[in-house]
Length: 331
Ligand code: ASP
Image (tube, rainbow, N blue to C red):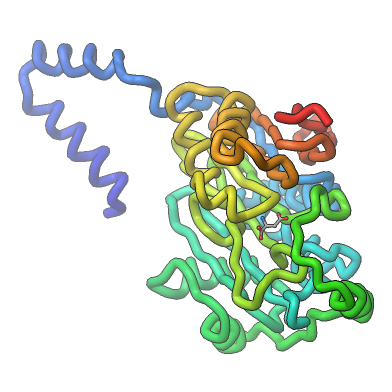
């Protein structure tokens, strides 16, 4: 029996044997607690993702519309960006580290709290699918570096050279100065973090990136870290992040946002508080971007970021929308 069902069943059987007045008083106490979930009545399928990755939400929607699971939807959705050679911040064609190696990070989380991640993995074009295999086929949550790559080969993923001619040329150009800096809104599309609700009302999320361009060898940001770059709790909602991963990790950003929603905040309010906490810790620093998006069990969404320029794509039965978010700084 799954742990959650076990807990549910034990609560019920306890209720069955205790006296009625005591049960009534338990219920009263329960009422005073903050709502654990926003109890979705009839939630319609929806998918959202960081930035205006239209093709990715369209693909995920295709899966949801056919009645597919939110887990399949987010995997299929983010794979579109992993495969896009023109996208230099995710998957194949991503910017290399400062030594010229493209190293990819990804994680995925399902409705039951299962999760999988790969960190700093080379030569594999679809890290999100490897992350899913880690989740489903191993007793572990994370595999890193050579171990992740080896595991991917064992699972039949082909070896792929991820450094495109264009990315190589840009890297060689960068090397002339080797200025180590973070760039606000790189190309206006960084990491893809995606959250979806399927026809059963179940939530799943995925996050995948090539990380900060020209990073130090071995550097890993927030994106493959469950709780930082992505977090899903099927009773409450989900959140995901893009931007300077170090700052998201320091506040365990996505977990924080889901917990704020659990306490009753809307997705929008929770994202705003997530950014505010980061800015509290960076009183003298303004030169970096972070964007959060979130969804709750009712299918309500929100997004917030530090600098103007961030948006998130959504797809529902009403169609596709690009949602520009409010910002902490106004310019
Ligand atoms: N969050 C990613 C990282 O820190 C990068 C990004 O979204 O720009 O690796």
